[in-house]
Image (cartoon, rainbow over all chains, first blue to last red):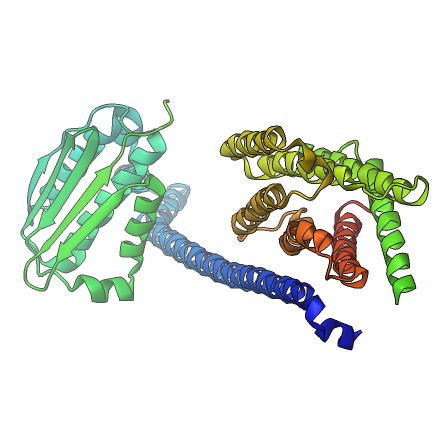
Length: 271
Length: 213
């Protein structure tokens, strides 16, 4: 067979066979190329998915921690403002039930109870208000933000400049709450850490987009290190921005205050 | 050696018929691409059987006219098959243009009917090979039930282009012994067996068990 193949007559057949073999080798090369590319692509996609899961885990963790902090704060508030005072009420009421007690004393105790219950009422209203401002639900985002500004201004330590322009039903109720929380967090950060004297909140609509601009004149911070440290407040803002499908930029440097811009697209679901 | 290849050739035909039957049993309840592919298998099996009947029963020397049915019908059905998978409308245009070229060839030289058609084979099988590469590229990210069939078609059509394209040359040359010609046909048979094997593997992997979709 080999001898026959090597004869001159069969040279054309030889060439054809060699060419077929080459084609098969090339075909194999192509198939292997696709096979290995495929493997690599699947691997990188897997890595991407894992990264995404890790990120989601982080968000979840941050959410849980925030939730716990919030619970702690509420528990503290309830304990300080309500339980302790109700204790006094209970004690006073107990004294009222004693038989040998003069009417003068009774009046005094009753007055005290009235005063304390009034305080408790005020505290519980305040706590509820802090948890979910009723203004937001009843009168919308604009009124709620204005109220927030007024509350901060009432402390008399800051000069607050509020200029809010919000087209109604631009966002859904849930989204409005997220925006409100973001602004609340920004105010909180300024109040707690910045040593600022002037706070400025400004919003306007531009080309179908709602833009919030928040600035303070505090001591500022290094944005990149803050991002690495990721305090709960900052990551909370980032998560809410992601949920809102909005974009935000934070500009700050030590000594120069902070400037945050939040750009929102109109809500897709009409309700 | 000759005997072995004879058996191989018969085995390839039997295998082809078995595969066709297997695919026909699953004809209902599968998608359009599967149906087109099954029709393709049936057509090819009928041509194969015709060819072998002519060879064994009727003493006709030249059954090459069947070859034209083979590559033209193969091109039509596989173009439809890949169009269904790739959803590219321009494939229809390619189909019409290529059929036009082949028709023109037949009008120019009607005697071609009893010879090989190297140009026609090269164009039709080349197009299908290109489609199969596009298919490989498209399904780089995810798996698909036709991946194995696609690789089989890719290999067989790519390598058999040369065998069929050189058919006239080899067939007409006085100097080439009958043995050399037979050798090429046998190589073709082995490759064809490979294709049938992969088609069978695809059936085994995807359709052997009745699945509720």
